View 1 (cartoon, rainbow, N blue to C red):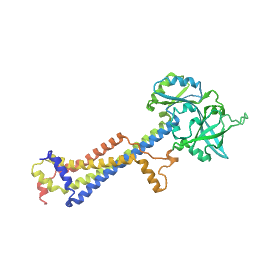
View 2 (view 1 turned 135 degrees about the vertical axis):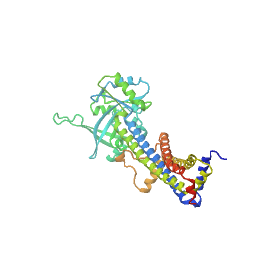
View 3 (view 1 turned 120 degrees about the vertical axis):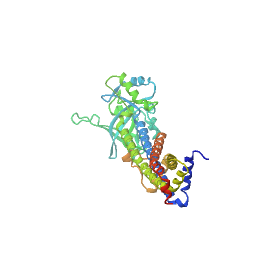
Length: 416
């Protein structure tokens, strides 16, 4: 005979619930399985979207800000070339580039926008970020002394300019009514645009050549700081600590985790809360499984009594129904994982399709900084969800199985 007997009877009992006599019980079992499937699918999909959201923000932020930034307490770094050569000697440093950063106003026919103006060296800027991958044009289009500028796509749209148009940059750096100093004005020609799909940068940032920035902002010979790109961004905190230890006290060093610490902590907290809330769906589905198994036990009272009279122990009866509950949980969880993975891997196709049907975007660029939803499936999340679901489902089958083991043969058969 098939061994172990409890496994055989449990699987046979599942098949038996498909008969017309047990149609209602079979429907409830199917509903419980469907509930588990939907719960797991939703949980995997939502966590995948949250991972994709965090990954997209990190990529775009680091594409602009780099992994480590070195400056000084007064916002100006002297002799940046020597500092660059020093940090390049450290293992793991991929690129180093200087920058000048200041707030200016851009004016086109009375349309004014405040922006963060970044002065960069084109040849070195390519080594410390990925922004050029999202650019129409290139940093090499910024020529020293030719007053070229590259704008964020949203900023260019707001100002109503395209490549080849001119605009006026107004710097208030040394503006003072008391001393008679007037704002610095300079006309720039647009030579490119970039689009990170992140309005925080697309609508408020512009790039010019480092020399042009130094002349306009009166920072000849000094820069705002240098940006570093690491081979592994996770090494940035340790590297920043090393630089702090070997440089003068007035040198200011910050890595990407510190620059955006509260922001990424908020995302991680939000992800955790989503997981806790959505795991409640699995708990509800597990309660449905309890109801299903209780009904199965009631429906099978006579069969339980017969098995007991044939010599099957109370523990054996309990294991029979545990097999049934575990089987339902495994099938529901497996289907949920499969559907969740399929949706997560195709989220960038599914979301635009839904948006085309609804006629409006699902994500507000103003509220969430990005305009596109993408999934980032993590094996750890799938394993955690599968494990939690299976444990909850297993616990849900314990009471009905224990109840089945307590059926008294004489009492159950007296009603047949």
